[in-house]
Image 1 (cartoon, one colour):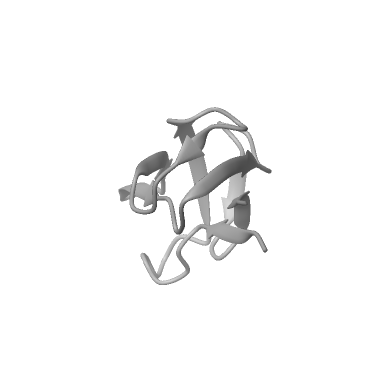
Image 2 (cartoon, one colour):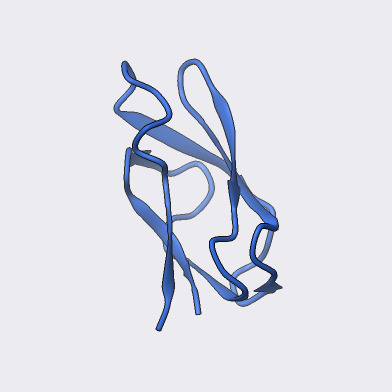
Amino acid sequence: MATEIKIPADLWEEDEDAVITSWLVDDGAGVEQGALIAEIMTAKVQYEILAPASGIVRIKEEADAVVPKGAVIGTVE
């Protein structure tokens, strides 16, 4: 079963959206749980996304995409 990679919903109050500034891994890459895999930016905060599980990353939202809080941006299979 795939584990979702989500934009945290509790990082900020004012901003509703974030921008995926970069994926640090390619689609289909293997990762270990806790590895740094992406960076996002809000109006006030830059935040690093860590792999929620070990496995193969499947990217659903590309870099530069604007996504809402809590959005699923990929999975780890």
